[in-house]
Structure formats: C-alpha cells, structure tokens
Image (cartoon, rainbow over all chains, first blue to last red; front, side):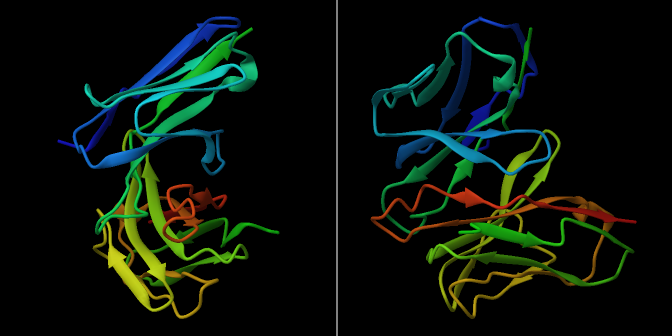
Length: 114
Length: 115
C-alpha cells in the first residue's frame, strides 16, 4: 500500500463548477500537507500548503486537512478553463529521518470545459 | 533568479548507454531531490540530498547514481540505460530544516527515451 493514495481521475467539469480533489494517507507522522499544480509538459508548482489539521483558503481554493481520518481535500470554487491541470497532493513529516522528504499522490487530471 | 535549471530538456539513448542529467539551483537551497514521473504512477523519488556531500536513496534508486559536491548542483547519472528508464525526470530543491523544507521548487523536467 502506498503511503499516499489519490484517485487519478480524469475529472471533467463545466466552467463554474465546484471541484473536490482528495487524498488519503497512512503515515500519522505527516504534518505538512501540500497541493501542487502541474500544467501539461511543465514541472509541478506549489499551490497551497497546510500545517496539521484545519482549513486554509486562498482565493477560489480551499485546502482542508482531517488528521483523525487521514484525509485531505482541495476545493476549487468557480472553476475556470485555466484550472485545467494535474493536481498532486504531497505530504511531509515534521521531524525524523524523513524530514524534508515529500510523499506524493499519483495526481488527479482535471479538465474544465467552457 | 533562474530557480531550478535542468539540462537537457530532451534526450534519446540506446540501451546500455550512460548519461548524466544536470540540475542546478541558485536559491542556496540545502535540500535537492530527483523524481521520475510515469503515466499513472505520479512522482517517485529516486535520490535526495540534505546537503553537500550527503545523499540518500528514495523509492526507486536502482540504475541511478548521484553525488552532491556543491550546494548548487545535483547531477543524476544513468549507469547503463534500460527501456524501463524511459520517463520524465524532475529535479527539485528546498530550504533546510525549519525553513520550509517541505516547499519544493521544481525544474521544467528532462524527457528521456531509451530505445
């Protein structure tokens, strides 16, 4: 079993829809939770990060972490065609031998059509 | 700042050939990593380094070698290329512990085909 599980999709939604992307994980040592966005033929770029549990909002994007369920989510409101990309969740431990190492989900491919 | 620079952008090799993928960063980051990305597999860690002279293996290290003689550079060597190493390779860097080590900055990638 991979440490981070993510449904690869693909996910296709109309412009203006609310998008929900999710990941589950098994390692309770993870404390930092990130979402990366990757456009076609480009490198991933950090979209948002959250430390421990709770919500974080940045414009149309909201990241949620539920450590008790080992479940994280990214919500995109009023989705736009420019949001079409692959979204990867990533996690990191706060301390220990794997400090600084990221564990990625497989990525979810999202298409927003006009 | 150029960020993380990877060269070459594309490469075609024959089975058994060796080559080095170059990665350089100008952000004075302590941590550097190499990933490969295959369809449906996401990003898989090959090797990483927490500072000059210190490297460690990731998930899929077999067939690859790394060294870190300077803070800026982290080359990845393919010892004897195999078709299974056809992939897109990404280099990433981040600050050291306590300074956002979890926020990694990625290069644009190297697309490698092994025939």
